[in-house]
Image 1 (cartoon, rainbow, N blue to C red):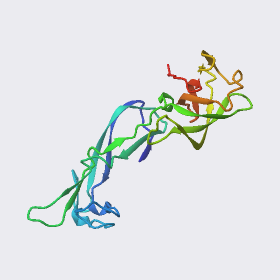
Image 2 (cartoon, helix red, strand yellow):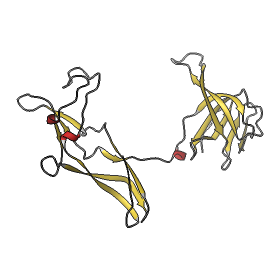
Image 3 (spheres, rainbow, N blue to C red):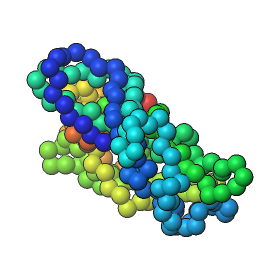
Image 4 (tube, rainbow, N blue to C red):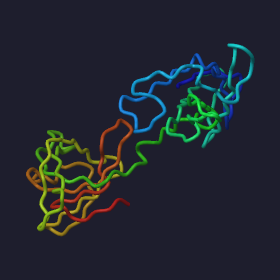
Amino acid sequence: MKFSATPAFRGHLHRAVLTVSGNAGDILLTTSSDPEVGFAAAASTTIPSSQIQVQHTQGTGTNLTVPVKVNFDSPLTVSATQSNALDLEFDLAHPAFLVGHVPVGAGATVWAVNFDGPVRRRTRHELARLVLRHTYGDVTAVSSDQSSITITKEFPTEPAADPETAVAGSQSLQISADSTNGTIFYDLDAKTRTVIDNFSSEGSLTGKYVRIAARYQQDGTWSPCAFGRAATSTTCG
């Protein structure tokens, strides 16, 4: 769920209170096409609203609502008179979200729906903070402006074989050198370590086997912080 609001103040918000419908008739519960053996309802069955109980409701009759408090892991910064977005989601895997109860004396299973806890702010982490798992492959091309290379990924044989062998994949990746901070380049053949901001000095890379430690950039592209020719051992600093 995405919300946008224009507050009359600016500052930091630490939680939000949502009001959602608490009427059982507004909730649709449908079983999967292949439920586990002994499940309380048949496959692809819609649960009757009479078997749904929404917890912590307010109001009467068919005008029931539920106030849902959502605490933020980190403050939401808002600006006065400007639209501010808040991204929330229902954690369907939360153990308290949907619980089945068998009434005393037998009878149809009653499903309790609890919004207090399963609703959370959806965190969007900074992509540039992530260091990806090392990638292996063969260099197939160096770009005309020498700012990037293209590799074909390779994967280890599974199950493991002795000696270890690689399996060529079909996925091609474009890897750009970090033109701002530089990329550490290790050459196992020459036993050298240099810092490069493009591949102009590495014209012989095509056809070479490489190991790459890369980060996502703001635009979603990959930029290596460490780069090894001939699969040298590399780390990101």
